[in-house]
Amino acid sequence: MFGQLALVLALCSPVVAFARTETRTPPTQAASVPALPTDPTLEQLLTEALANRPEMHQAEAPVRAARERVPQASALPDPVLQVGIQNDGFNGFMIGEMETSYFSIMVSQALPFPGKRELRTEVAQLGAKAASTQVARVRLSIEAEVRRGYLDLLLTRERLMLLERLQALWKQSADMARIRYETGEGAQSDLLRAQLELNRLRQRQLALRAEERVRVQTLNRLSGRPLETPLPTTTRVRDMGVPEPGDVEAAEKDALERSPELAQQRALVAQAGQQVALARRERLPDFTVSAGVMPRGGAFPPMWQANVGVTLPIFSGSKQDRVVAERGAQAEASARGVETLEQVLRLRVRERLIALEALRDTVAIYREGLLMQSAATAESTLTQYRVGRASFASVLEANTGIIRDEEDYLRTLADAQRLAIAQAEVSLEPVASLGGSAQSAGGMPGTGSTPSAPAGGAAPAGGSPGAPASSSSSSMSGM
Image (cartoon, rainbow, N blue to C red; front, side, top):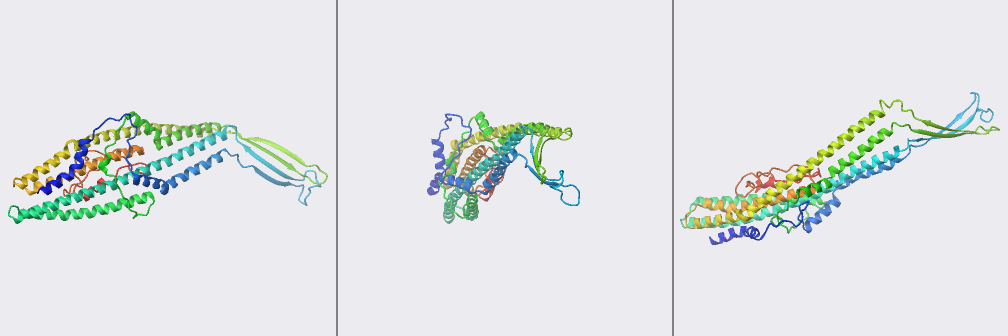
């Protein structure tokens, strides 16, 4: 009996001790992005993922292609070489015999109106700049994807530890129920219930170990390693704490500066402005310069000629003017896109900071009262069961409640980390509902309840850019 009580207290003592020693001191300076925890294993995974992921190379190839278009835009049109012959009559070649018979060699070169080539070059450069933002998005998404995968692995392994603790608790409960049944003080149903729960725990343990293996293989795939490469971890979810929400204005400014989507849209706005200027310049005529020499043979001296031509934009009303209107509409659409993205980014930043503050307060409730109250309830129930004043079902419920509360506490910490990852990723995805985060007992061993969705940001686009919501919480029902 006392051994079981000691085990119950040991289950929650690390959290209780951490709750007593931690103080929530305000940061010395406002942080724009919550600090993300790291360790050597995670750093190595991030380095290898950025170096080995094919998505990075796939994103870099269009950028190289766009940069190759810049010198093309500034190049002159290819010159035209013409070789011909002019002959008098059809009875034979009269070159050298007739004054008007000769060979001709002509070269012509088209010359755009001054300023057109420069504008075309600027348009191509801005297009390459817009394309380069995709590399930044893929980089952010890969890093966020690896961090979320690593967080899922840590959470799965910590859930396994909780399951092992609960299994030890059930074994002691089964031994106690057997002793009371053999001495005639307890019912046979108590012993059968304990044995039933032990078998259920073994099933859930198998499911969790399979989940852990999948998590490891997923991380290895993300970093370009062999799938079965072991991933030792020393960090625990409970050691990560809750990131500081930071200052709203600083966070908004950081998001507006680092967002690849906003940088791309701004580059497209600048490109659209230059395209409008180029479309207006296209209404001006281009020139053609040509020169040639005509050898006549015999005693006749060679002839030469030089020409200057100019295009006549007489159809500008249906062509060049329409291009100007088209580019103007595109420029307006790009400008509206910038406004939309800025609004969405500010909203997402505030959503995450509000959610992070709520999770921080929720963690404080766990640390400052709920976990200790759960431990005290289990201790009191065990004492009452020993003297016959409580049922065995009450003991089982109290014992399970300790693990359930601790797992919900870990899930809340993980949700806070996902929000910080989404903030670092500059995700545009909305924050998931927090309604179930503090209430759900989903995935708790022995409860059979259904977990709520995690409070995360966006799902990655590594897919897609940016989304940090993890699948770990959705798998809690296997516990």
